[in-house]
Length: 497
Image (tube, rainbow, N blue to C red):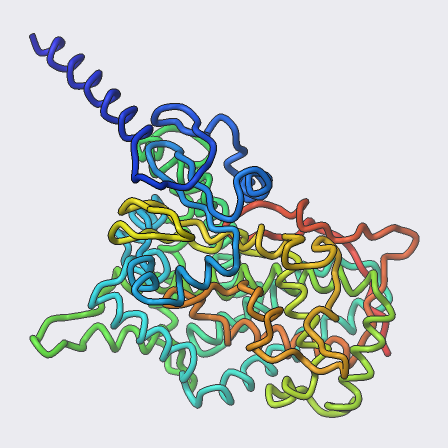
């Protein structure tokens, strides 16, 4: 009798899933049909989902829908629809939620973070707290600037040690970025051989692979896979272990007497705070989740951008000369760059923006969900649909960009060589850090470090191709997949000016 009931239950569940898969809101968007429950899973490479969505855009248009492993996905491929969805009310609030993810539930302790959690009163308070930590910590932007410039001293030393040699720049860039993250988190840097950098680097490499929308989607649908001896399961367990080791190291270091402190100290103090009802609003799980967010966003995005820019500039000596002339004119050769110089360096700003557009390092941004049924792009969309802000397609669409797979920083400059204003239609097509309520909380931090790094590099050296070897052009379609794309390894030479 029990076996009979189980069979009925399984068959009923399959019928229900199949029915839900083929029914939906009237006036729903077009898209590939796929199979019941499995949807389009057999038609895509889950590690490079953005490439298939780019292909489908040509067939189905600016907005389309598909199903995969029991979830409905709505893909937004239009800048106009993206801005309407995340900037105009009531859509902006309705679509500010997050879809359920394996990463958020299992790796980040039931959405204890800021990035993968959906809005709530506690989430709002957490997000404001993290904004305050990133944007006004210590003495604000001046403190950030001084910290980054201090870490650039080591970077410049590494460049001088390897001048005119064929060198893999990945290690140099990694140490610079990780040193700034260490300083932000704990108030000082211990170097690449210290207790933190190896853990930070390994943790983010693992999390990047795990949080890839395709990989996460498979684990979300079948969470029991984490108990099986599979590569993706090993990544999950190792990421958890490494992050706990990192927290243990930070706890030990935070107890040492030191003049400088970081956001870890501030978060520990927040554990004692209470809201108006006497309840704790921040706990140890929040420290766990928020640190994952900050270190990941601060490392992966900046790393991918800087290493891509170095590769791109090594192939464009004339562009480097133009950048060097701008840096020499605004900053000179003898003083350190300052963040106040950014507004006077339009070409450098344009190069950074074009690099971010060209590589689209977070090709699908972070997935959203709608808290109630709504309308997107003129189509009816059911509640709890996963919304994909497809920045990869928008940044590589011929509808918006001439020759989109070519690197052209002049796109962002006017006839006088000045940076186009934020209100210009071209600037409005640029969405590397997202839009609206869920835009990237580390945008200012990332752009500041990128400017100081590249302007310092142009001030002291010229990037050249390796001796006797050909450096391939950076093709974003060949970058290493993850929630944040990363360039393939390469070598260059740094020539002293």
